[in-house]
Length: 301
Length: 234
Image (cartoon, rainbow over all chains, first blue to last red; front, side, top):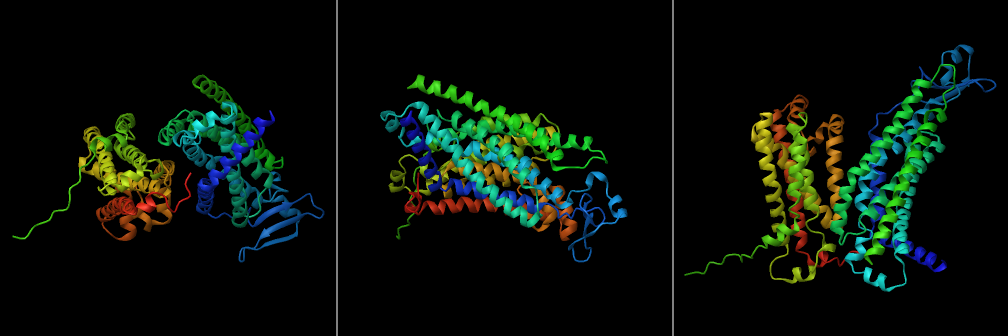
């Protein structure tokens, strides 16, 4: 067991090192980040407010109001009058419209727009993970070494997942900084949740399908073609999760009442958790595929 | 009598070129064309939706220095190395061109549009995306990068280029799938004839593709670089 674990760790380490040296991670991460920044930059500038009111903190003592100065755009916090409080629907009190708007923007970009880039990129990019060894005749070396096919296949898959997770981590941090500067303050909880519960499992599923389905290919070219065949499946999965996410967010609209305070949990909580549940269901399919590929590789050996 | 010297004519390995250019792609693009033509809304644009993408992917898979067997031998042979690109690109042109021409005739009958108009619609973006795929693979030394570049640029152009033109109309020459109707709108904006704007767009994007192909052919002359002397390889 200890030997298998150390072999797994070593293969993952060298898989990561190879991905780094080939600049694959850098190119993929750079592409993801630039595209996300481009999408954000293309959004029309918005200054969410009801009249000039940005936030009514009715539960504070004394109640405060944040207004945007029409001439300078500066935010001014002052004590609220009863009339000003009443001018804002109850549902929109005690919530910053800037935070609400920027959180909605980043969550939508990350959970709905970004996965389509991931779907297209990873199924083609990671398909060559195992066939590359065959093309460079490394498999013969592996077959002569005391590395079981379970360890080899598992480590390759985990190595690809680790490379992808590191890339996504950098993109998440980079885009978070950019969004904070350009869009203003947003709720970090929902930003992190959309990355960890929507984007990450989706990316892992697509990568898993790609690495495993193309594992039998004899060359890079064949592996890429298998990746292309998988592309419609990945896009179908993307459609499923984006429709699920979007419909949950839309459903919230029908539940909003003027009396009930609108919270970010109400807006995104159900959408993220429902989408995550579907995602983890699909992640199980990678496990089944792994077993099939492993059994097939044992039969072929 | 002075001797007239002709440049040496090297043989072209057609059989190998066709084998390397995955001729079965013709069946895929043909089937995709027929499927898109089943939808009346897509019929007039089916050629420009299918052919650039199919030919681009095929071009991206044509020549990847890291995956080319016996590359050293090929580069050491007396026949100039760019011949590898000439013959394979020609094979892709023949394969996709045949599908494209057949599709043009079929679409022309189905949607009642002049064949030349349809040809001008799909040929320039096909050249541009083929050049892009070939160049991306050559520079990155990996077919996957070329294939990804082709897919992403095609999808981005189809999905977002119209929106981009609304914000930056001056970028119209770079829109791969520029439609005559946009030329009409642009004519009012630029104060020029729509035919001129459309012609500029078609010429510019076809030139982009040709330039990308020429860049690869020029790059093939630098054998050290093709062999990856300056690259961290796998």
